[in-house]
Image (cartoon, rainbow, N blue to C red; front, side, top):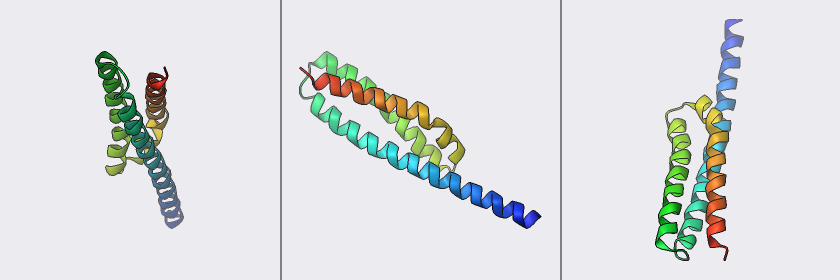
Length: 103
């Protein structure tokens, strides 16, 4: 029984690691996209708006890098638990950057 329980725990841990890895890869992809959007938007808006967008980017970077740091610390459960909030932040920032580029 102990061997089976240990094997099951290892299987669960590996599944959790793979899920966390996928979340971190998606967060990284979204952050790269946001950096490109910010680069374009910052060239087309005034200084006050750039400062506002930079504050939004800081929040996005914090949300994404928080997941990455948790993953690097092997805290897969917290990566999974933080996915929704982090992605909501990243999505909101993407929307702000896209709106900033519309005339």
